Length: 474
Ligand code: 5AD
Ligand code: SF4
Image (cartoon, rainbow, N blue to C red; front, side):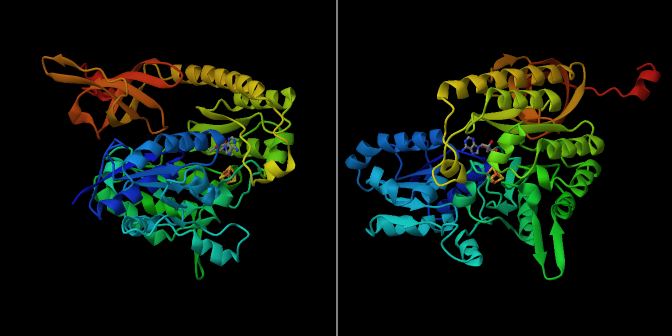
């Protein structure tokens, strides 16, 4: 008998991938997806702990399910992922009708645990060891990753897929909960990664995004042999069918020349680097324990420009970190002016219990100041993004077409329905244009005629007239 599964995912790409894997494993048990939590036999939340807001959203979603569980006690409610690892039994205390708590390192156990609960075993919880609860090897083992099972319906699009290459993080930035919930940094064996990428390519996937909290810290030792991140990129590049390779998120200190050279030389590698700076102030970077100074970042950025003059670089920033003065914030504004990032993800600092930041420094910047700094930085970044996007006017770009745009408008024309489609360039810029269903999944030349801070607008170039034809007078 088919059972219905509702799954909601918040947080980063890692969580999107984890949900894909959970769905794949539950499909094997006869589950089908539904988009109604009310109609579902099992409701799962794959959660994020990076900021308080993400946790609050899940606790309210759980609150909304209380009545549904009372009406149907057989409905199984599960909390998966980072918040499950961080809050553990606290979730049962706050929402006693939750049946299942599973950390990011135990997701492969979800089908078994659900079937035990259905058989009357009562509440179940499986989480990894904490960072101080054993020897390194033992803790590493407790963060198992289970990547072979895939589910195409859960991917961003049928043509794009994530492949995990590094799990966990060892950087311990003082604001960040990730090292404690996702465990020690571990690189996956290259053979596993390549097998997975080949499988995805054979299923029609054209773009692969390699994932890691510090993806460019990848290093795998096997006896005498060490596979560096750049070696792995070279190997993935060999796979037929894969047209584009991206990777996120980079750690500035690990952006070595061999990686930049590889990105320059291999045509399938996206000329796009997401390398978060977090703050433009040395004093703040020091309190954050980011492990680099503004000069270190500048040196790295200069090298990016040397190897890849036209690459798009993007960043993350946290505003209102403990003790951030107006001058320190201005230093961040200056860095955005200096580097002219393609885009920046800007976050208001959210204190995370259990981190060094929460232990050492009071969260003393008011919500109002955080909000105001967030807006100022966003306005500046938008101005820069828009000016940079204007450079594309009149130019032609190669776009991998992802599907209908969110604001898709359909109108019927003589030659069939016209769709508003969206896709991305090699340097990760979003392009919206009119096209048709057949073009989804294709890589097309698009001529850009308009641009704002977030989007380029263009037309499909139907007849590519090369310069040699122009000289022939065509
Ligand atoms: N508060 C606000 N933002 C945070 N990030 C990580 N931890 C926090 C926190 N406690 C941001 C960083 C990181 C991005 C994924 O989330 O900018 O790069
Ligand atoms: Fe968090 Fe820093 Fe690791 Fe990124 S590098 S996941 S910000 S601890």
